[in-house]
Each structure stands twice: as C-alpha cells, then as structure tokens.
Length: 152
Ligand code: CTP
Ligand code: ZN
Image 1 (cartoon, rainbow, N blue to C red):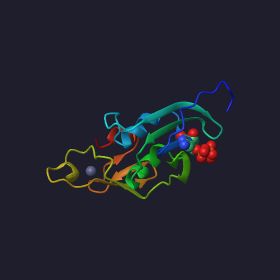
Image 2: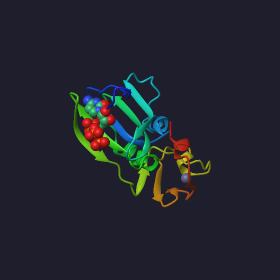
Image 3: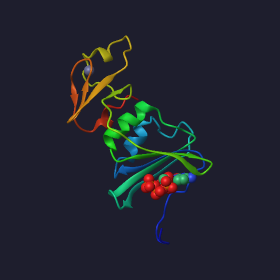
Image 4: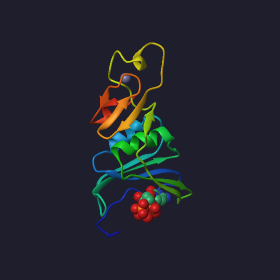
C-alpha cells in the first residue's frame, strides 16, 4: 500500500465483504438490513482501486456475521464478493459467494396480488434465473436493481 493510499482501518471482530462491485456498498448494507441505528460499527470504502475489478467497494461490519440467505442475495448484486470472517484482527475464514439456485426471505415480491403479500405471512422465495429472479408463488420476474425489492 503506498503512502498516498487511504484505507478504512482493520477491524477486530466481524465481517469484511470485499470485492463488491463498485457502487454497490449501500445496497449491500440494505441487504443486511443495516441503516446505522443498530449500533454495529460499519465502515465502507467506495470505488477503491482494485486489480481484479478496476474499482471495488468494501463493507466492514463489526460484531456481526451474515446469514446464508443474506449471502445468497448479496451474490446477485456482488458476484465477485469475498466474505471474510475476522476474529481478534485475523481473517479466520474467507469465502467467495456463489450464485444460489434460490433465495428466500430477503427480497419481497412487487406483485400486490401475490400470496406473499396477503395478510397471512408467507416467506418469499425466488428462483434464480439467467436474467434475474422469479417469484416461486406468482412467477413475477425481477430483472434489475434487485436492491429495490429488499424486504425492510
Ligand atoms: N481486514 C480487516 N480487518 C482485519 C483483517 C482484514 O478489515 N483485522 C480486511 C482487509 O483490509 C481486506 C479483507 O479484510 O480488505 C481481507 O483481508 P486479507 O485476507 O488479509 O487481504 P487480502 O489477502 O488482500 O484478501 P484477498 O486475497 O481476498 O484480496
Ligand atoms: Zn410473487
């Protein structure tokens, strides 16, 4: 790292989501349901130069690990992401995300008539298809800006 580079500090415990496509960091936080009011330490780097991606975002969340359904949705907006688990300043686990066959729970279906939007709560489920995700209940296809459909 050159003396002119500025990086967000290392964290003691938590999760570093690295190699996020440039510009997607805030969507990553949305997927994790983090808006800052939870009290976790959160640092983000946006449009940091990267050999592999040209520019990348980094999201560091202290004292928090990610659930599999969060990682599944994350993989759709940040297919090159690496999830690093940090304990006592050391990276103890590093995983690449994989495109899942389906995602459940994190996204919500925009079709008002979909059963997932009825009064009885039904957990959303979407099949991952080549051009987006398809609702498992009403077949509505969400093509782009999946972050707009995050269930908050
Ligand atoms: N990191 C951190 N706090 C720590 C340890 C690591 O914030 N206590 C961050 C690093 O800044 C880096 C990411 O976690 O963004 C992964 O760390 P590391 O595996 O040490 O870096 P690289 O080897 O460069 O990772 P990769 O090979 O995945 O690019
Ligand atoms: Zn639906």
